[in-house]
Length: 438
Ligand code: ATP
Ligand code: MG
Ligand code: MG
Ligand code: MG
Image (tube, rainbow, N blue to C red; front, side, top):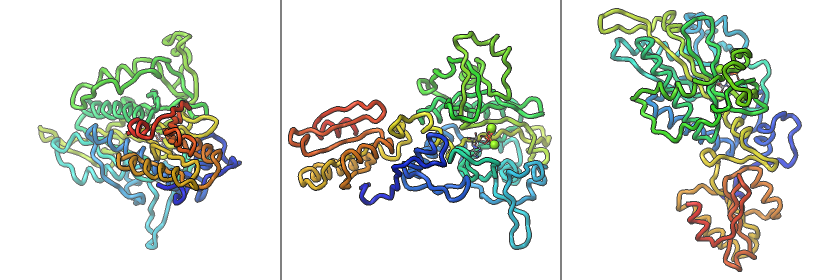
């Protein structure tokens, strides 16, 4: 993409309304534009990142054996009456009436709808286990939408739902999602720690929140330091095999958010030098809730003995749009965003320092073509801005690599390759730069 043709409305000033760094940087980098409180348009640069995150989430759900479908954003109130949640959900639910005066709503979550889909399509034990998911916009009329996409009213969520014959099988599904979440966040360059979460009044439930450490997060957390350094990517995961050892490893140490925290237990279980008390961002939440929805909504299957039983269910959410802000909170510096390679909107920013110089532009055009031929996404700054402005903008939008080409270097046969994360620079030939990047 040539910058001269790209819609990238970056801002020089810091927008006053933005309280946290990710919100400021997303506005300054021209990633989003507020449409109304807590509702955003995703501009080209931001939308690319959102889609990269979505792709990783999808790949890891698919890898874990979950099946993608797509449910609508607008739901009928009827199902929510069946589950008893229509009244309970309160003001966070956006309620709508259609022209026939039928009560509808913009879905804040999809347990009811997916349970209805499952009950209509499943008959027996042969129809379980299944994990179904979709990536769809949700609406919650948050009291205080803030921090940009981190607490929006309209936001993109991946929500998966598991259906099993009994508790043991449902726990297998829970572990599959648990491990797939570890991989999903690790692939985005994030350290997300699973925390024991509140499970509601019904016993036998199980729940974990995945929390990314960040001082601006809304969640207060307490955990054992070792958990933060665990790495899931260095092992082979067999989703058909026994995942209990991995889950046990990640749940073997104290990790709780404030509503579950117990100071005495924390101090007893965690040596003083290993105690972490910080803030974080909830980026995912998994839940086993048994027959909470299958009973009232009558989602039954028959067992091999011919008995009819309500299915055991779990639900598994990831805040896809919140992650865009969350990743920035975890990865930025004074000059701007520092995208992890896996989610970066472009891999390389190619900077032409002097577009009026024919040789310089020719060299840039050639690098641009070769990079694209190698399948690398490039943002090519072919504009006539000053070098200083170009560098500042490249740092702001945070592409992992900057390839800087100027007339002086070209005379010596070199270009400059800069790694955004470390600031490391190398002078090398165009060809060596290409082979580094490819
Ligand atoms: P929070 O505690 O932040 O209000 P939640 O516990 O209400 O979140 P869940 O119902 O667990 O949210 O939804 C699953 C995921 O969706 C959350 O872990 C979070 O990443 C994301 N999410 C929830 N609410 C919002 C929101 N208002 N804006 C953006 N993402 C959200
Ligand atoms: Mg909430
Ligand atoms: Mg929460
Ligand atoms: Mg939650």
